[in-house]
Image 1 (spheres, helix red, strand yellow):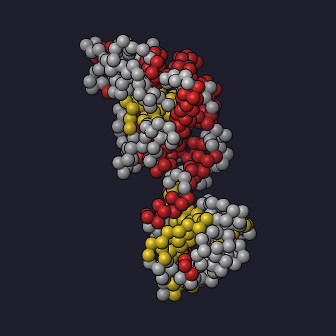
Image 2 (tube, helix red, strand yellow):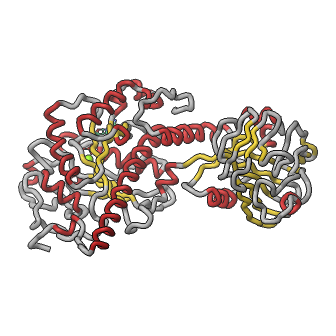
Image 3 (cartoon, helix red, strand yellow):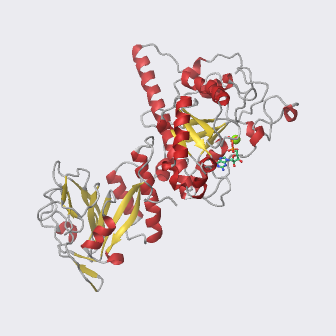
Amino acid sequence: MLTNTISIRIYKCVPQKLLTWYFLLSNHRQAKSAMSCGRLTETDKEQLETWIGGSPKKFTLLYSFTNDGCDVATFHQKCNNQGPTVTVLYNPKGSVYGGFASVGWESSYTWSVDNAAYLFQLKFSGLRKCNRFPAKPGCNTVISSPDHGPAFGPGGCDLNPFCSKAPCLNGIFKLNGNMNTFGTNFDTAGLQSADINNGTMDVTELEVYKLAELLCKELGCYQGPVESAPGDVRILLLGPVGSGKSGFVNTVQSAFSERLRQIAQVGIGENSFTTQRSLRNHKFCIRGLTNNTYKPYRLRTRSGANPNIRLCDIPGVRRGWGLDATELGFLLDGNIPEHYTFHPSVHCSTRSPGFVCKPPRGREVHCVALVVDSAPDMDAETADWLKTFTRIVNERSIPLAILLTKIDLACPTLAEDLSGVFKSQVIETKVNKASSIFGVPRNNVWPVKNYENEACVDDDVTILSLLALQRLVHLAEDYIEGQEIGITERDEEGNGRDHAGEIVESDTA
Ligand SMILES: Nc1nc2c(ncn2[C@@H]2O[C@H](COP(=O)(O)OP(=O)(O)O)[C@@H](O)[C@H]2O)c(=O)[nH]1
Ligand SMILES: [Mg+2]
């Protein structure tokens, strides 16, 4: 399993933020299995998430009175350096309230001007009452101290639950903290502490949750770039036969489904394009020969939602045979209809059945992932040949990324334990090499491991595939936004030029 003990000696191409997610997610898994879920309801979590903003969060219970007792030392042992947290108090009168800190807790004496921090109430006297009390600008809002539990606001404290042990008597913890200066560092809109805690510091429970970004949840509800034309981002998987394109589709779909999925046919190996002989009597659409087909897979989450992401799987390319440069251009521009079946020797043209002369906006490809088997060293001939394809992508300024597949074969220790991926010299060398061969920045080269002989989903495989997918989606977004700006600028200049896909001419519809 990936653990937070992964060395930070990581090659530079991995953005720190993604690593943070990587750690947070792995920590989350450990914590989740070790601890109970806490009392915070899903509705409460959604409310807190909305107040925090940004992408969906995973709540992991780090510390609670009922699990760990009311003890400052235990609080710090469990909650220090955990990043953003939310502290929730439940009192015997049926009130629920607390505070969010975006900075992590520490045992040092640290006062932080955490402008994102806020206090909140979710219930008062048993009735739902949702209020967020934001930080006042420039105020010290989050107070870390080895002598206090989670404390918000200095001095008397806006919310300072406890600074010593409190025993539990008949299910009640009599806290020695206070809310004496409630409203000093947070804007409480005139409310007094008694309007929040019924005038008592008694609680039945106090919980501290860690909040982690959830890649799966975030990507699973992806709606497309805001402010631009709604619709899918289209990511084309381009690469040699057998490099792992279809495997990647299945791996990502498995991550969303939380079980192994095989929506794309894998393992045809040698003949991603079916043999000449089997095609002899067919022209373009060969029923049943699905591996020759252009398939823009729509992903689906476990809950049945469809993120607006299309992973476009195409037949593998082979030197002198199969998809040619013109066909790739058509694919990129959106001229090739979905589920079009390619023919290895009769190439697609503007006269081909279903050819889309004027593709509607959004049908073009927004990002290309060059899928490369990382196991063998790429020979110069193959590299040159693949470069002819990447040139067509570059001519259109479509972002290009590289997925380095089969890292388990490239580096056998990774087959046992994927956690070493970001410190593997072997993988680092492969990343550097792929980056320099294809002129792709190293932070656009992603090592991945596709499901191949596994019997069930694996968190480590999931994380690598989702990190890669996220990068592809971001590149696609940037491209779409750039296009939108270009179109707007052209419109403003009165040129009114159509986008690239619409200038393809054809004499057949
Ligand atoms: N060990 C291992 N095998 C893989 C990986 N990705 C793909 N494969 C295997 O490589 C073969 C070709 O994969 P496939 O996805 O069909 O390649 P495609 O032609 O590019 O679509 C299949 O037998 C896969 O099981 C990987 O990451 N690790
Ligand atoms: Mg395939």
